[in-house]
Amino acid sequence: MVSKEVLTLTNQFWIAMFVLQLATFVFTHWLAKTLGLTVAAACCLQVLLAAGPCIMLYRRVTARIKELADKTKTQSPVVFQDLPVPLIVADKRGQITAINDLAGEICGISDLKEPINLFALSFTNDNPLFFLAQTLKDKQVYHEQHYIYQREDDLKYYLLCTAEILKKDGQSAGAMLIALPVTEHSLLSNYLSQRGKLAMISELAAGTAHEIRNPLTTVQGLIQLLSRRFQEGDPAREYVAIMLQEIGQINRIINELLQLARRRTPNLSFASLPAVLDKVLLTVAAEANRRSIIIEKQYNHRLPLMVLDEDQIQQAFWHLASNAIHAMPYGGTLTVAARYLTAEDIMEITFTDTGTGIPREKMTQIFYPFFTTRPEATGLGLPVSYQIIDNHGGRISVKSLPGKGSTFTVKLPLVNYEKAKTP
Image 1 (cartoon, rainbow, N blue to C red):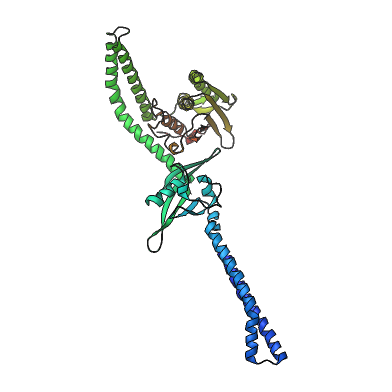
Image 2 (cartoon, helix red, strand yellow):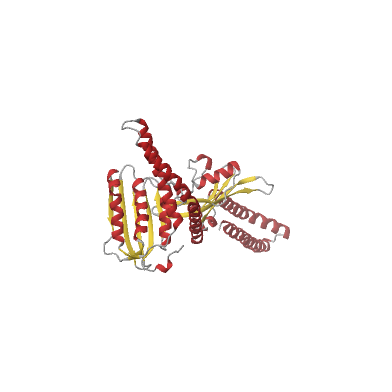
């Protein structure tokens, strides 16, 4: 738009010059004829009359062009604002020379009019500006760096890419960053990739779990026999109790591995979703009470019946409720809601806590086997829940704000079980 205005000013300048020259020619020709001047004298008079206005017009045009040029140095080109993706350009000193509103939003920059220097800003290592600064400082280029931006209750997924900008002589002129939105196709690819990881860990579990369990059962039995040899109050008896407790933890991990390995077909029957939720919340009520957590139920007991495996769904929901409770070490509120979405013919169930939330960089890992932020946890609860929901033809997703809490959303088909997955 700036170049268009410069072109318009240039055209106007030459048109004005032509009109001025024509006017002065006619005027001087008339004046020379009236006063009886020679041709040479008339030409000199024409130059004198036209010189002043021409100089004034030239100064006005060049001043306006300079003003427009200065404006382009301090403000992003309009084409940047029209781009549907966040884009930032910085020179080699770290000065941001171009940034659009979308980039300003995800980077947390509210005032885009003032000059901004990357190296004068303070930001975390998960901010897009961090990757741009690293490219400027260390020439490190990033490809498909996952980034999650959350605004209120809306999550947006991006792939960050940076590149160094080079001059014709090969010298660095700066760097640029572009954030590409992750499309539904990419999300589906991630979903299928997750299923592949679960399948791989399931095969591993099937081949090793029984081999581990058999000798472990023998060890457990021998330790129990050994514990009878020690009297009450004997320190060795306490050590034996710790050993049995740890063996119990190993057995729990094996059981969850076997749960992943079996991937059995759900035993379907008509069931009441509110009744399933009531059972789950009853089993976690004692732990919630111990942690000063209030449980709120937001579902109608007249919801339509569903076709599902009640035991499996109860297990999946138990993991979600238990995770929510453990995310609130200092008390809070666990809200469990359910509603029937008529248009989609699905049931939507949400587990919302007011706990610590999930760090942004961890969001893409929470359904991976063995990933956990709790030392006492196995990291298999969410993968098991994921698999159960997947076997029922459903989907599970999460939204989280660090320091404010998380919401896990489960969507299950009501009766149309032909969409459900089979082993």
